[in-house]
Length: 95
Image 1 (cartoon, rainbow, N blue to C red):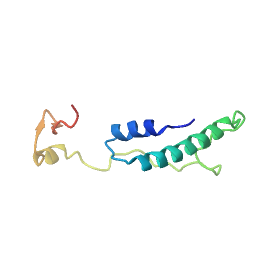
Image 2 (image 1 turned 90 degrees about the horizontal axis):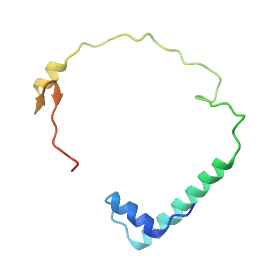
Image 3 (image 1 turned 90 degrees about the vertical axis):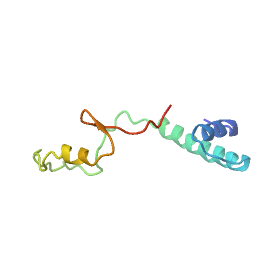
């Protein structure tokens, strides 16, 4: 898969990044190489390979799930700038 400089510029605009034409070309080339590598990796047949969570065949030692700290919600909300019905109120960041 190839990524054009126009697509890179559109992505940069959406991410609110300022890039020059030269940088757009460099990013286009680099990202296209990454996409080609991903395509190569996707082409490999892994149907008879078992998924692994760890390279060694070991299991995790798990601890018992117990509560170790007290609920201090009221204490933390008392010093918060703004709360309502147990929730923290924050300024709107997206329109």
